[in-house]
Amino acid sequence: MPRCPGVNDVSTQEKLLHARQMQSKRIKLVGHVLEHDAHLNPRLTSDAGRRRRIFLLSPANATGVRGRLILGDSGQSPLAQRLRGEGASLGEVFSFISGLYFRGKLAYARAYADPPPGVPGIMVITASRGLVSPDKVVTLEELCEISSVPVAATESRYRIPLERDARALSAAMGEDCEAVLLGSIATPKYVEPLSGPFGARLMFPSEFVGRGDMSRGSLLLRCVREGSQLQYSRFAEGHVQRRRSRN
Image (cartoon, rainbow, N blue to C red; front, top):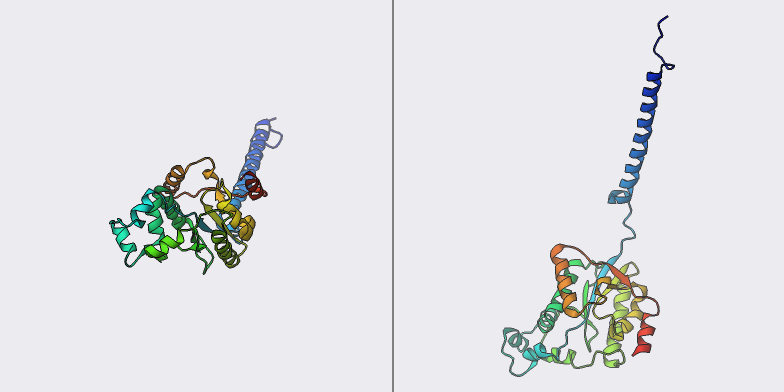
């Protein structure tokens, strides 16, 4: 008596088992893809926690060789002449004095600053005027005044206006904005006055550790060219106290 094909047929059972296995694999795969998309697709995730970012740039040293080229009585360059007339922006002046390092800091900050509405995205630390916009036009007399005070955590003429402006900026930018220091992190001259006003929102580029000024400048300019942003770290609790005990 011929056998009718059905569920008892071995070949049919193997086909059914294979179909069930394929269906199970497909369900697992589809589920994984959906979960993956939900994690990466910005339309499926909230950006309410996204933090905005401003940059604080350390100043150029106007007492160096390049600073004397424009501050000295013999300054004949176009920039030196403009400083003696209508003035020039602080960012341009510091870029000339510091060269690669400040130029890299300013270009990077202009590329990646993302401040809250009404808050400046870039501020320059100065020796006696606190935080100043890099676009502020200064004359030779103003530049001499800005650069006349030692940049040191123990210098009240430097520290008082810096802390005043940092407190105002901190209040204006809110809790969901970070302040990234583009400057030396190995001494307390910037970290100590800024840590109080900004607290845990004060950050620095992780890649700055162990690099010199020229290396940092090159790194920042390369990031601008490549359209890539550095990783930022928070100053560890106790960082300022440890630095203070060493100096």
